[in-house]
Length: 89
Image (cartoon, rainbow, N blue to C red; front, side, top):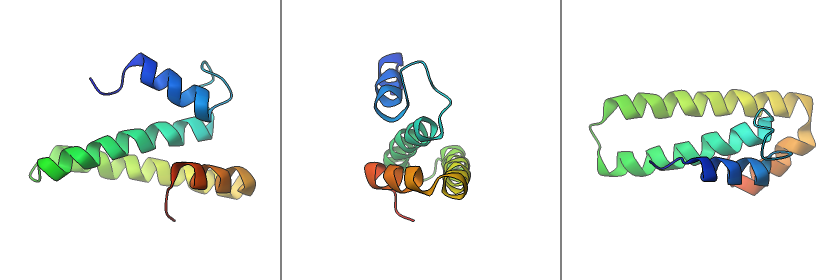
């Protein structure tokens, strides 16, 4: 399994306020980015996996709406997470 408890803790400790604070926008965006990168690599090998492709599109939409929320409320946090994760607008 690619997303273990330790990986999640590392993501949330790095991008969230703490390990137990899993609800921050930055933590959720970082987790979605990790999952998106994994699914993208999977789809490069398995081009006809349409269920995974659908999941990827849904994840990108969720991340986009969280980024839009963050951009609307706190632009400095938005800019920081974009640079940190290397997400292109």
